[in-house]
Image 1: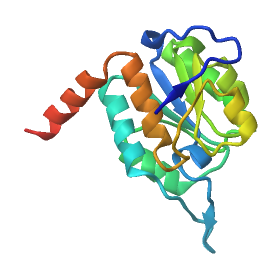
Image 2: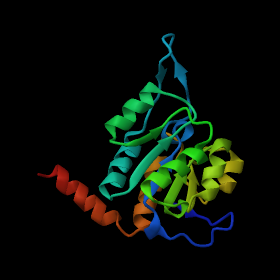
Image 3: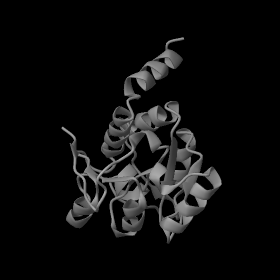
Amino acid sequence: MNKLTRKIGKAHVDWDAIKVVVFDCDGVLTDGSIILSGEYNDVKRFCAQDGMGIYLLIQAGLIPVVITGRKSIALARRCEELHIQHLFQGVPNKLVVIDQLLSQLEMKWRDVAYMGDDWNDIPSMAKAAISACPADAPQRIREIADWVSERKGGKGAVRDYIELILQKKRIFDRTIEAYLATISK
């Protein structure tokens, strides 16, 4: 069962305003493991359920964004597969990059839902309309997040957060119906 708790002074979330959903990679889209080969390639394991959630997010007209401090060919490939148009890698200051993206999209932080799992996500989590983290994020991050998934990073936490957002926006059923219509032709 999802637990929604209000923290860090956010007494109200305007769910209808949420248009952009930002995800960290390592520890959110993946379990946080980093496997390096001798060829400077990395290997990442992604959750298919999270991928379906991202398809639903796009189907609903929301904008998925992935931002990470690392650079990964595997992540670029996964984002391409999922049709994620906004991928930012090797980012030391996520706040600055998200500010620039929001300016380009003519949006504000009140339009943003954010999911992170570590200290480098805290500034963005604090500015977003709502923040979330996976169940296995460090305790202090779980205390700071507005919502904590019952699932771990790379194990469905992203899907849980997306479904929560779609339900709170009252568009979950309509989004599922639209998705099913696209695959039933």
